[in-house]
Image (cartoon, rainbow, N blue to C red):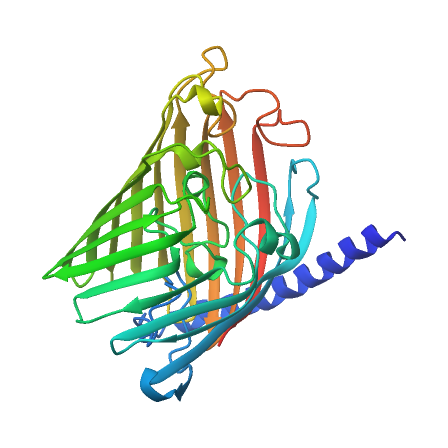
Length: 402
């Protein structure tokens, strides 16, 4: 048997083992749910990384006193994934197994001077795109220290942050464990994830404001401005408006810095709410890439998209998350518009279902996802020749949040 076949066999065995564990624990969760009411998640003593999905951070992380910095927390995540997919992109494979996270987070949360440091390995699986294993993703994206910043907080309501910051844009965060689903969605493919710069935050009553000057899609060119305004309706409901754009033009083009998106404007309207066992987070997104002959963009192009993400908690340990999306773009090959999805003027939709089990610091998640594409341009769509219009993925992720 070839090395590749041995590896595929090992992935299958590992995946089946995880599946057995997952469905066994899911069955236990369903049985317990008959007699146990769903409870809210345990309080998280640390704010970073933000976890807005179904997983809950360790409520009792390691901490130690560090002189004038006060109490310092050390947390982290170790997880692996395996998946099968149809119509893989060139260089990708039908079966994959990899580490999804091997990261540590160190931070303090009180006083004038605060900080956050994130270090380790990660992969960034996203719908409808080729999977890049963690060993390559580190170099291709944000390095072994993907996020970290210094924060000055003279009051509880005002702070300034500087360094490698999580983006203000979008309804999904960067790393797998932070979200409702393992993979980020189609709208996320139009957004940035990490930017280097400075950010000011101010809260007055129910309104939280943020303003950031940064390098957009990790371009190292500081020509982007973000602004965010969030209104807390009550303890369970928040609505936010976020906008950002590149006021100049930037010719940098890498995996972390896609040329067209890094020269765009992005607008989000985001709602988050909880009702008992239900958590919902729909958001609307509009992006615009202006024409720029110097960058080879001969005509404007835009995207309009909507995503509905959320989950239902059967009880503390078992939750079912799902996401539905639709995104469409303007332009055509004939008018020289850029390709923002699967060719100029293309559109796509997706459905993702992610049953999730967590017991204390251990978690396991399964995931089914489907992407369908329309009005595609040959060579820009899915599959080995860029002509397929659909992709299915079956994925499992398991690990520990310590």
